[in-house]
Image 1 (cartoon, rainbow, N blue to C red):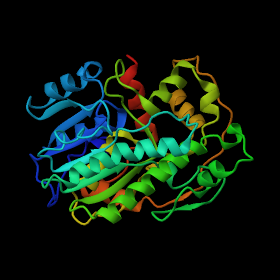
Image 2 (image 1 turned 90 degrees about the vertical axis):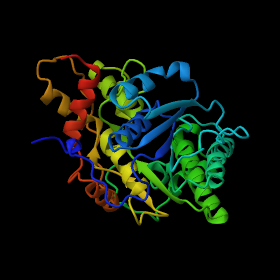
Image 3 (image 1 turned 180 degrees about the vertical axis):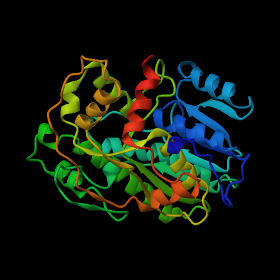
Length: 352
């Protein structure tokens, strides 16, 4: 049986016609490159932004060799919050997908980080508001704006959920940085998303606005030699026996395949009736010991895998039904499995 992601994309009365131009920020990243690929496959044109084009020439090479030469354009936006930074990139686009953002998990000053991130994204939202062709905008949020993963906790997470745990921790002066852990990063993401929803409510732009929340993204890396691999690069760590101390401390949670993630963004961008929603990109539960188990089963001749201690299992009641519905509306009946995604992840960087 063919993997789910090979199903042809079907569009039913999209609010943005094929052939239209879509802006994708940070197009050299793992998520954004797959979003661009799905858009191009589906008949859209893409204008992708990067901070340093000289370091991302591979993006243009891949897409222009795979699709028509005029279907993809790479442009520079060095400072996301600079006055007028988005005036030219937003010209003539029908949709915009905001992916570029703060990538470091290490945040010392949450308020400063929130201020900077909001400036980056509001700058684009304002430019889009002034461009009459824009019909749909998506902000790439995180599942961590909705909850803090915790083993064995049967939390219910839905579109009304916010990461109150992270917000409490960063506000507690009695906690050490070690006790706060990733809470500053999670709280920053949470406050930024809340700030963007607040801006949309106040400014009432003519375009529709939604957020997509991918949890851990695995699957093939488009250019393993040159591309920031993000979470998909952690499979390579496990393959090479590197950074195991980090993997041991990653709480079991949910994952989504990069190709499914790209389709989810497409569905959110163009499907009629999707407006003002928080879409949770969660396909199934995973843990790094489970990923290791898949690697051992898939590559029995590789004998040097290093074991990880049992990490438990996620028990979250995750409201991912809307995301599943959008995926199916594009002609894909089910999510790509963790096993398939891990194998394809490995095949993208290992010559077997």
